[in-house]
Image (cartoon, rainbow over all chains, first blue to last red; front, top):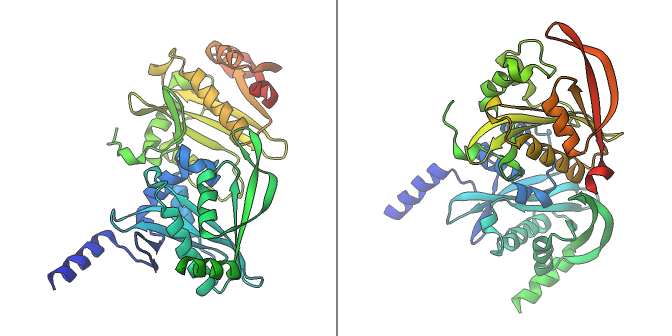
Length: 200
Length: 185
């Protein structure tokens, strides 16, 4: 009994609303309470480089973004990556450019706190997101595009079973030159196959 | 100055002595101070008094789909405080041209900070925004800024004769420009 009370007290303080539960992380809806963290990630020189944020974003601008929501079904889903033990959001993950008719979407992931990099958190977050995309949103295919030297990102994609689709030349402008992007896709079939392989 | 919470400092581009940070609505009185200070505003466009409300408006989120102005707060890393503003404005995305301007607190003049700020902003403009040409409008008597522009590689492009009225007489205005190819060499 005492343990349950403790837990609800803790939840009240930190206001966690898990939308998708994982083991080390949950995926939660964005919370305007954390606007300072969001804006920190958007502007942090290391984090913003491959997240392609090249315009400085003030706190007021960030606040405004969370206000303007389109009505009805949107073409994107944005979730916080919530670290369960440390009780705080450490990044953002989601789908955008959702094409409901054709059944595909683009996936994005950004771990905003560099000290949570290289801990397989990206992988767990992406797996949870894929489960959601295929089993709840009934999508058929997920795309991801990654700058060719953003090694961290395409390692995650590879681990989960994303298939390398090709290279888009000169897709982004980074550090003074045009760089190529690696494009990955994960179809529902490939996803199911990779889960089965995992069970073995 | 109100207590500066550590987390609210948001460096966007890191330098050695200074960083370019995101503009901070909490520092609007500092910004207004520099825009009104007789020494700093002398060679800028601010010959009308700027109220705090007017300055606040400059930093409010705008409805525009694409940005025309980008402001940076110049943050002094060791002294842990804002010491000026730098910005790109009149950004024309078709021609990829923009104007550049800056204001530094007089207490930090003559410390080569202008040079570092100039380098950080130009690096950002060319390497991240993929711009083509940056222009600085400088009043003829603004020797410090003219020297700085030349040091950074800007070249005098045109002279607007007797263009502005300062301290009781007309003064020329120079337009100095620098191209991406020159900067990236």
